[in-house]
Image (cartoon, rainbow, N blue to C red; front, side, top):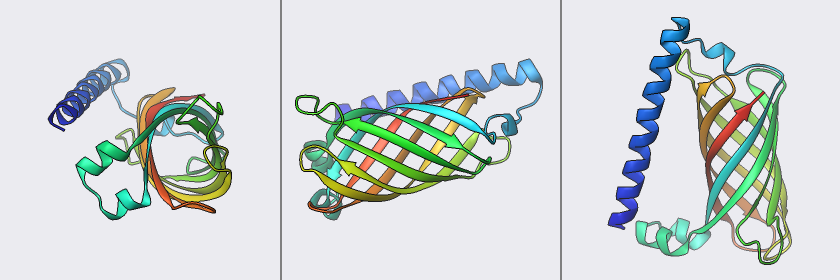
Amino acid sequence: MKTLRQTMAIGIGAIATFGAVCLTARSAESGRWDSSQFYRPNELSIDLFGSGSIGQQTIDNFSGTRVTEDVRLGAGVGINCFFTRHFGLGGEAYTENTADNLVDSASLNLLCRFPIGESGLAPYLLGGGGYQFDVIEQWLVNAGAGLEFRFHKNWGLFFDARYVFAEETENYGVGRAGVRLSF
């Protein structure tokens, strides 16, 4: 657990340092930080992310030890299309085990983001549904929230978490963190 905390602290410190350098460079280039150029209407973006999921029992009895022992790690890709600055649709697919199926789960979500002034930050809400192909085939409904930080008009970092209501199995939680490339 101590090693996990140290790794997380180093990662957060590296991201904060990189963000500060980017903000300083951006301010020097333009003289002004204008977040309106970062979150645009008619925007298409691609997500590359890592994921972690935990079962309902771990959520009900939440502790660092349980999460470390029970988390299932994965990776995925997504695509988002924002029709306005605030509303869009996002599709994603991810896997936690490539031994059977390349895609374990796929979903489509309604996205609602709220850019904060000139900070480059945009909290967002998501909700939608999808299908799980592996381990058990079943329909899913999910709802969650996240935060994105744009360092540049074409890329940023994001993380989100959602609660998944499963048709056949126990409900579970999924967290994602990754890079978002915007066009």
